[in-house]
Amino acid sequence: MIGLETYQRGLLDLLKERGPAPADPYLRRVADSRELAMLRDIAMWWRVFQLEAQCRLTARLLRRMGCFDESALSYFNGNNTSPFVEELSRDFLRYLFNHPDPLVRSTSHFEYALSQVLGSSAESFEILWDRNPDSVFLSLDRGTELPPAEVEYAYLMLVSRSIPDRISCTRRPAEID
Image (tube, rainbow, N blue to C red):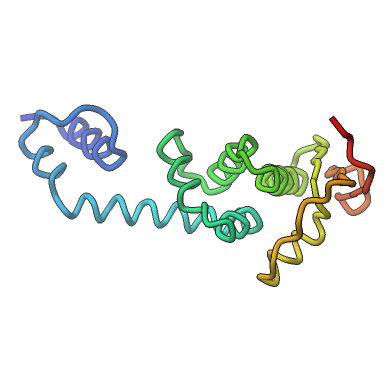
């Protein structure tokens, strides 16, 4: 017979789908149960719900692009995640800094920067956009078509406590490679 702590760790490993198949007969039965699959679905749903609530702009954009669930699943499967929603959302936004789509990168970087500056961070952030961010935010809010990238212009957004409204954005000619 194994101890309670070993059972608890075994159940957590099963829930998080990590480690080898359990040797214990009880844990093997749990591993093959439909209830475990249901618990995994509930846990994923709850974490996704938290991300959507905390990362409103980024989640809407990813949903609009049809890749929110895939991005969230990829994040959860590839990273240790915090049980605290603030850390979870912060880490998810940082995870998206390397997304292949430049609009996802800019949106997640903006949302991360804003949460940091509205919190206690004295750090300043620069975010480069390939289209007018105001048009992006309006589109996400209204559910309308996203604006296309602007080849001729780039938008440099600054997010900082030292700026009167915390956000400043300037349009400038795009740099040509």
